[in-house]
Length: 226
Image 1: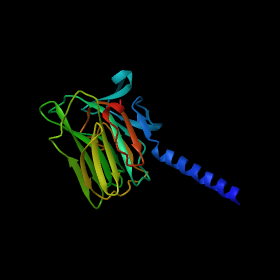
Image 2: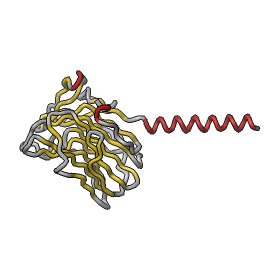
Image 3: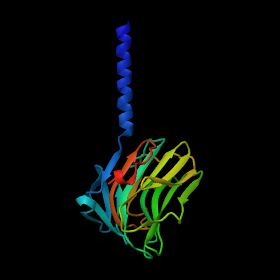
Image 4: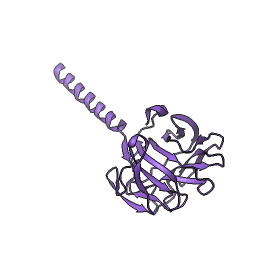
């Protein structure tokens, strides 16, 4: 009986470890192809280009006029908490591209429930983060124009959600937070990269990767990302 109990304990512990590792493992989208991202087909908008970025890594360049990618997948489907991270480099594009919505998750046929990662430019060659969540019950914008960063440099923006707390980070440092109840965005949703899904607020710069965890994690310091 004792040996049977020990065997059951080992099995349960193994299943727990496997489940934990699966949850911790991110969905990683490297921006190294225009036709597919993370194994999911894309619809190409305009003429984004696949070029060499930092350290020779392949990245996608967006011109801020009509370039974008629409990925046929919702990476946070089924998640009650999550982390979304984007590695990118914005260009000096003020005043043509002041508002840039470069990651947008939504089922446009249903509407109402959406998540966006955005940035704003000022006239001093700086940008600042804008994180947004909307449901049919509420909307929350996290933005602070005093928390600025230089254009033309690689950076990360990270959005986390857990227990009604939405938090925004830049380069691993938390800058913004607020309270909102997340209502699940359905698996039928898609992900727009480089533009808002209705093709406005275009991004001008380069995107190296998008990572998504179905857990709310504390972002690492910037030096660990690139």
